[in-house]
Length: 167
Image 1 (cartoon, rainbow, N blue to C red):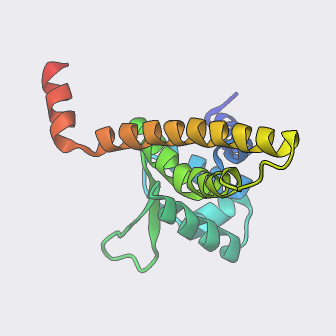
Image 2: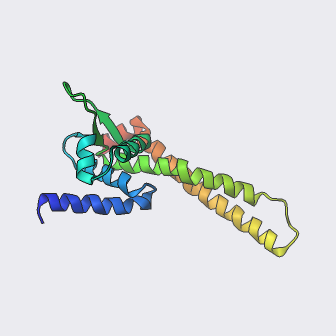
Image 3: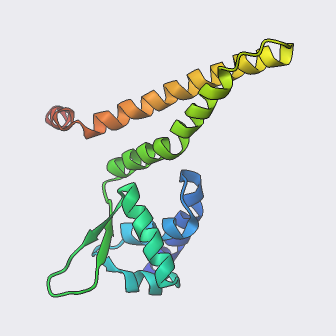
């Protein structure tokens, strides 16, 4: 397997994994391509490499920038825009966790809080439902708090400095 075959295999595999962390296949493929590129890449190069339309590339690049894992870069003398991906894997994981919490966990918590606070004890099923959804709410809230703590720790520059000094 040569470099181009290996790069293509990685981009395709990362694309398939994208749905596991809450993004579509094309978005994940663009991210993968940018992540393994040593230089910032133009939208035209992304379109050519992945065989996608300008609209598809533009929409997915914008979404990746919203997630905070792809950045626009400017090259002097170039009118085209170039893009690069977050290369720090700890930072990437932190941003993905934070974004998934915002998009998935927080809305789910809102629903769990709403459905677990119904005032219906008219049947065994209703009591069981309230009990189980309260337990689920508590569990998901604890998990979300853990995610918040980890991402806060990653953002705390003083903590990073202390950890670096100790390491």
